[in-house]
Amino acid sequence: MCLAIPLRLISVNGTDAVGEVGGIQREVSIMMTPDVKVGDYVIVHAGFAIQVLDQKEAEENLEILRQIGETVEVKREEVQARRKAGNPD
Image (cartoon, rainbow, N blue to C red; front, side, top):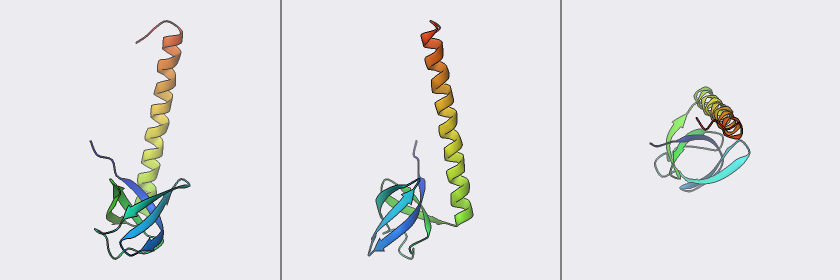
């Protein structure tokens, strides 16, 4: 399974850029999206910007990822609580 993350570009230098999401910055290649500029949102997979997104679409994707993360955390806590209570499943 592949996962691509939306990032907002905060700097562009040739075919290299820096993107940010949630306060975390990552270097990315923009070789496949050469017309991007600072402020654009891109989908990044394996260090490469592979698609440009509009802000609304990027924010919707980030919200879905946030919800998935919250759900995973709740389930992890439930499993840990069951294991502590002696019920492994």
